[in-house]
Image (cartoon, rainbow, N blue to C red; front, side, top):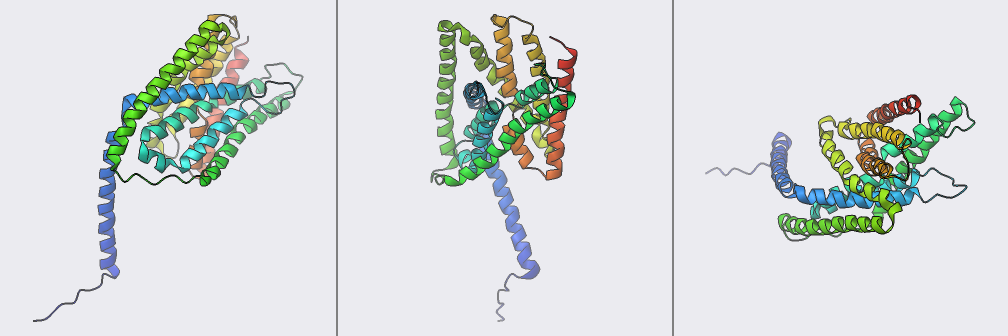
Length: 338
């Protein structure tokens, strides 16, 4: 009897075996991903998480914009919210796998809800527009007006980039714990149930607290409207974000949100200048501007998207977003006088 030796898998046979293993691995990954999607797409928990984080983001943004409400301030009030929001998203991005292994909705709430609401693309565009059209009627020429607008870009978007890079570096100081030994499905199910109640209680608590403050301190009424309208802006941005995978090199969902939100904010801003700033109409308009538009548009997601595509496409996407939002905003303020 002739005994046949097992031939080592080299050359074509070895590569074919590796290819088969790779195909099996892909199938397994597809199955696992399908299970994760089934668990993570819990609409109620997602909406509650986005709502709570949006309200928290609005509060943080309002506080940060008032940091330099003093004489001799050295930077624009749009810098700090962009810096802090992008700092946080930078940290989150580095630990995304660890956070999503516990609960996808937690990462979504922190990134899309919190960071997206702290930062605001439309706010930067509006402040830049005011400088370009010289709303305050400073003694400047056209060139100086344009330089003032560019200065706002540097303050807002420059602070965003610095915060994002710093956040990714700071993330290296943290060492996330290893994944639990229990099954992913069990861990996710428990987290979703707990998070649903936590987000729900905190969201209701913040809104009730805001209403109580409004009753006892009427001048805070406009901030209550900010907290009320904020989550709706985030919901719209989240829904538009589902369009982004269709155009990987040009996130069309974020583009639509940032451009349309900037135009809406400019219109609301001009409307607010024609009403009594002590009445409820102004407070509602203020809530729509700071709450809805502030949360509807985002710099944090925009910065992450710019860092994830090639430099050539990033320049095109970034400049297209700014130009498409800036030009209509300038036209509105120039044509529509106070």
